[in-house]
Image (cartoon, rainbow, N blue to C red):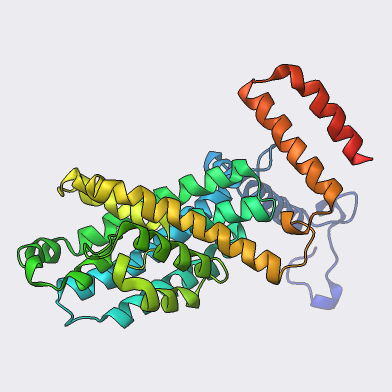
Length: 333
């Protein structure tokens, strides 16, 4: 190209062009861009097994239990904080209806947040009911229950840290708080009510709770909360109870009323949830996955399969295993 030549007289130097008639400067720019894209691809793309790092692999295999843990923690923190706000302020910073609404909306928020991943059980009684009446795998049910208990332990510590001073200050004056009001923060029954009445009370409450999760929690606590605290969730009772013992309360919380924490929050609540699910399946549900709607052949096969799996796992009655396998095969045809 000539120096000081007019634009129309300028000509490209053939030596400055590549064999494909491409500008070297442009090629360098393209190579730099490709290099940056390759580096970003190595950073952003997963490795050979499809995971970005070790934590993403752990999260992939535990995403459902982790969702249950997170949802239970969220619901418990909201409910416990509302309860402590009411009790430690002697009703000046809350009321029992507001506390009940906080529990209901806390669980509703948790279900909306984590339900898409795990189903939003947030209650061992619900997980067990689904395992019995909807074919929810027993192994996953145990993982869900463990995650729910861990969530209640996590949530039991956070509200205690927030309301620590108020809790210990109100403990000195707890004798002046009405008994019914004092019991609402945990699951206890009143001394004037018999244990049998309280067990039936919790069975009935859990049976109602098994139909709907969410806003119905508010109604159930408002209607049935005074006698036993309205805690129709065994994990919700166990976590704060254990945290209370850890932070200094006496271990009598696990011994009083003939170990009420077992018969009330666990046995009665799970029994009530199973009874409520049974009534729902008998009256409303028409799907084929419920044992209530099994045809006779399928019900017989299900019982035999359960007996066969139980014998294999416990390694008992091995002589009957071939007969059970034969009967299961016959029931399939």
